[in-house]
Image (cartoon, rainbow, N blue to C red; front, side):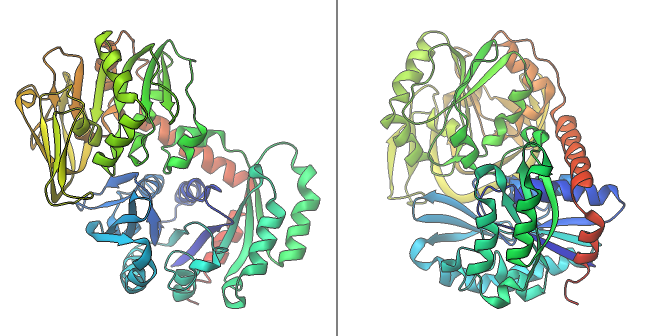
Length: 485
């Protein structure tokens, strides 16, 4: 058994994609590989076959290993609900809410459960690829850490530090990380990878050597900009902050970027459609008047995000869009927003109470503590579909008599009488080629019929090939055998 951990000089340096690519590269070499992330913070999650939820990135990494995702791959998941609170998910199940004030103390007891999950994975494979969170350079968070060096030292897992050259200052980022770490933590780092390089590698040869000399760590690779990573589902909303509206396609589909947007990777398959211009609308911009379809996405805080939706004036834009004959689709929290009311009598999301919805569907939602977590399959709009449910709340009302989908566990969602407003709790619906074809036909688009799953799998193989060409993978395999030695 071996293990190797990738930590970063900061967030969004590409750790998730590199772990996925290495998972596929090592799997293609015939090794039994499993991904692992001790603690993740993300509102993009996936449902596992054992009835739990984990971060979307770990589900993708499991796919890269050609195995089913399991809750052991991400034992602690934090899902931000507000600026100072997060839902705590442990071993796939909701365990409560963490506040900024009790975060450090609350995570300390979780290390034992993290190690138990890791050891179960490690016992069943040849190599575990571990992804850190944020950066070990955040030394103000070191006490009680379970995500980076706290885990690495507990299991004696060698670490590679990933630096992002595209954002600039990568020499200072890597060497500076070495400078601020405690000696015992710095000793866990065996080398570094430089990610997202553009141009002639010879131009960075001296910089690479300077990092090796000043940090005292070996370099294991200079990785080019991985263009195929754009074909993979994104994990963090930070990606959306750099993605503005586009008009490259023939017909516009618009989605507002809610403050607590969740599972926005639901929309990724639409990027495969040449007839679609997918416009992610940031705060401060109106919903485009030329949109054929507006999608209200999932939300980790439905009532708070509905208030933010109204503060932006998007409710006015949406009603005008509907009056012009435009179509509307609400997914999960977005479905709840489209109804007449949303009630939270137990104060699950915030203060107890009820708020009016947008009124485009004749349904009402009541928040409940029970969380639906299950993979599902069935039909919708005459097409076969597979996906998953991940929500709190029960929605009832007149429009549910016209369900959006017929699933194996019963009807799902609602359709307005005018046939232009849809609501569903089903995540992952656009991965179905036939469902995508049926829905796009309703707004005048002929689907290209691209198989999304095949596209993601091909992207993983392409990334693995790039890593084989630019990373010393045999040396990484040898390094991984130092774990617990």
